[in-house]
Image (cartoon, rainbow, N blue to C red; front, side):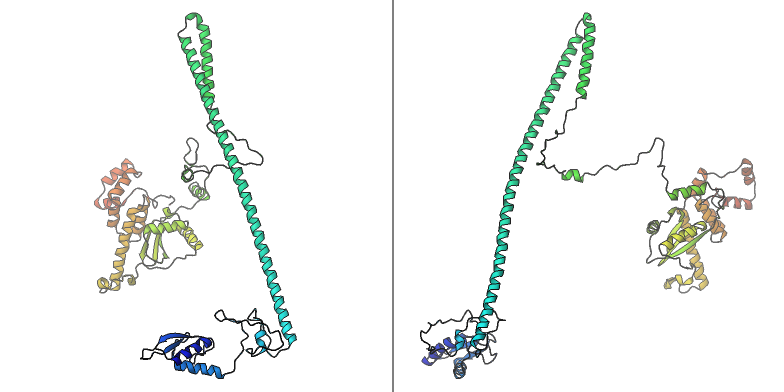
Length: 496
């Protein structure tokens, strides 16, 4: 059982719990009961709500004794919700109540934290000024609240007006819907009447035509007239177009009927592609571009210099190795004519090689210059390009150059197989003159089955006497005859 002394201290704690300050964190009013001790005579324990420190009842008694020895401090701050406010009756006489320590208990509760009250020792005039200021603030706040209230009232009135307008519009919409339904019914009735009239006319015409056919010869003239009338009536029926579209609806100046929107299927349906219509016998449009005119002018220009059968490789930088198809697609973006690019490949990392005719060099460089791309100097036969150390480390520089020549020759033969006729023969003969291809390699390329088919399709200009001379020539001369091919760009003056 709890002793009587502990009960007395607990009752004193209930009276002073809002004033007790913790000896650890100095927090005021945070002490709460925290059960009892597990002893033969249990004693109550207390805990600080802020620092969570547990105290015995003896320590709490010391805290309360320290409060009784100190002078009471009058708090001018507004009371908290947990504290009880004791209201005392006003004294009829001029004597002050015994429990009041000072005049501060008669001060009002402050409206704002920033509105600091006058000190306790201030005069009555200062207190009056403070009260007047607080009254002014209260009136200002009341005016602001009144303005907000008026604004809310106006919003409510506007809302009511909008609701009434919506109701009116709904009624108008209902009336318009009814009118539309009436008009639709009228249109249906008109269509039915037209169909019945047409059917009646057709029936009467068929009956008259039947009677005219089965009538005697005496009524031949009348039958002819009746037949003409029947034909005229049938043509009139054919010319009658049943109005499938609804008749124009009468609209008032104030009422507007909403139009129906197209369905999703109609919007998503693809429109047929419009192709240009050419005149009969016209193959292309008679609106050539500047590039077409320039190309045509080269064919019909007699003052142009005859082309030379010289070709060269131009090398440009690249950030990676690309396929020939990808290279040609990039060239198209630059405005380069891929027909005049005979070969496009990557001989090495970060390098692109283009085989062109020498007459196309200036135009090609101008297109690359417009794209801020400049050609680079690249030596195809530099021994440093052989990077396979396992297979080529034991070779000398001359052997490495010969290896690179073999690689270049293999790539050239492969690119020649993709070139069109007769450009492939012109390019092959050019590299034969540059001693890149041997006579045997040139013959093997010209004697290719595909090239033979082309040669048969486009035979060279030979005479019977020349053919006899070739057949009767020696072995050495026959070797030279094999080298001959159908006329290429290098043999005749033609534009590449």
